[in-house]
Length: 165
Image (cartoon, rainbow, N blue to C red):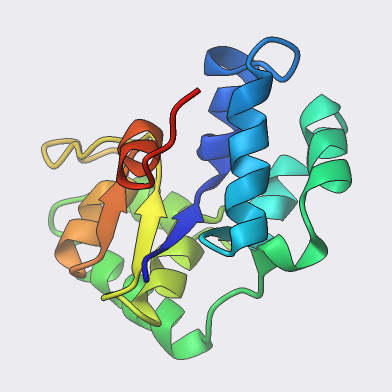
C-alpha cells in the first residue's frame, strides 16, 4: 500500500491560499481521515516549519492530527545520499541553491531522504513542480526524479485515493 508523505507547503499553501480552514472544511476533514487510516503522514521537520507560525494551522494540527502523524527525521545515510546528489550537481546549481536545499532548518532534503527508506511505497506530496532549467533553487520534484522517488501534487493524491469533496 502506498504511503503519502506531505511536505510543508502541502499544509501551508492549502491553509493560506487554496483551502482555508474556515472555508474548505471538507478538505481538512479528508486530511484528518487519511491520517487516521495511516495513508498520509509527514515528518517532524515539516512540523517544525509549520510551527514557526503560531497560527490557526498550528492549532488545527494540534487538535486534529495524532502526534505520530509526524514521523522522525530519516536515517543519516539516506539524508547523506540526498545531499551528496545535490552537491554532485554543483556544476549546474548555484551554491546558494545547494546550501538552501541542504539547510537543516528546511524539510525538503529530509523529505526526499525519508522517501528513500521505501521508494516503492512512499509518494512525496508537494505542490512544487519540476523546474529542471532553474539553477537558483533545487525543487523537490527534481530531487525525486534524480533519486527515483514518486511524487504527486495534492489533487493527484486525492484522485489516487478516490477522494471527493
